[in-house]
Length: 155
Figure (cartoon, rainbow, N blue to C red):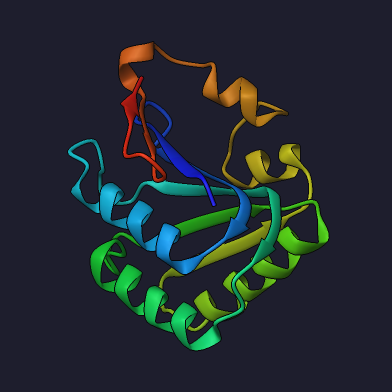
């Protein structure tokens, strides 16, 4: 599963995108890179794009362990957390529903699954109707991109 994230500091959003088969190993690698990223800030809202996955690793025990690690490493209860998941295919919606179910038990976490880009962006308070429009806003030096498969960094 190639995955990447883009931090958009002007919007207070980190955009996370996955393709292919979503695996816990790749998600864990991506989370470790994000946790270590100096551009990461408490309270960044998360936009998770699952529209390009075609399957996902259905290891529910592993998923719970991943979530527990994410809570410990990323989630700051006093800041709250907003995660909006965009998924418009059966595999993406299935994984997105699992995220919503597992995160709903975490106090201070707001997690929403949306099936259109415009709805996902609206929940985040954005006026753009497509994710590509959001990614195109702001100066290039205000964005950081990481790719899990190779660890490449680019702006």
